[in-house]
Length: 184
Image 1 (cartoon, one colour):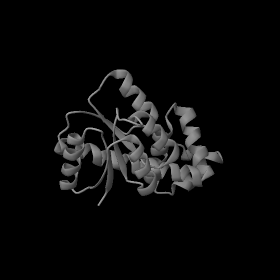
Image 2 (cartoon, helix red, strand yellow):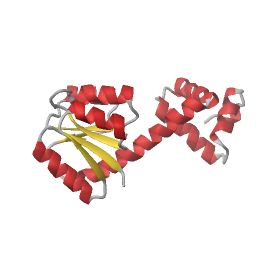
Image 3 (spheres, one colour):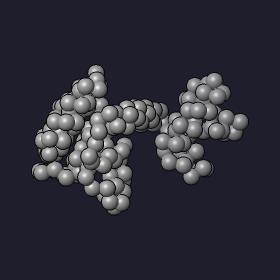
């Protein structure tokens, strides 16, 4: 079962979400405040954290910054507040999504599954870039040449490698060494 943290100071919302997500097949860890949520993420590393924006002790935005900087736990927000500035700040921190309360569990399960898949893709990107300098260089070349963000450039390279039926590392090496026939 996929482990998800749900952090919300509203006990009714927390209970309802947690029970609904359990019924949907997730293992759920509950936190009533941001400090507890951070401790759980540091000790148990859930696959995803669903964070309320406004919580006592450590608010959702600051909690997300800490998760981004101190853990590998991906996160998305749930909130009764959907103003444009707040959503933009959440995106800038690295949120995989932003859900507006009230929530129906059956309606958010597809969003959670999509966020989990996206988190896995991002993890693969980070692993590839940190472990392979050639791939990182090729991704940078595509970013610069085509004005793409890192994830999109990486996906473009990966798709090109599949199309050419070659390894991503081989495609990257050919690009870095100047074989322009290999460019995406």
